Image (spheres, rainbow, N blue to C red):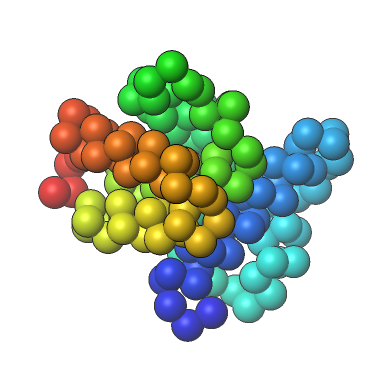
Length: 136
């Protein structure tokens, strides 16, 4: 994994796998799932996955606050992972907002459809303009 973009792609794959395991009521350590998807240790991936899992409810609530007649739980698991990663990077990290938004949009273009990508762009834009993002 050479770039942060590749790391972000690994993160959504890990979050997807964790969601599938949780739905199947299969207990697996998060670090085991990270190791399966990303065999070479990467602190950015590990820390981000743990933080997203630990803050899932807050991230989902923030997404739901800006979705119109929709909720994050109605999205498929890949889209949920992309939304959570985008919101997490935008709100909780020092990643420049434009980078956090663009990276999430690029992942959505690759793994989702146009309607979801537009929704994601709208949600992230609203969060950017309406939430206190302290690292700006």
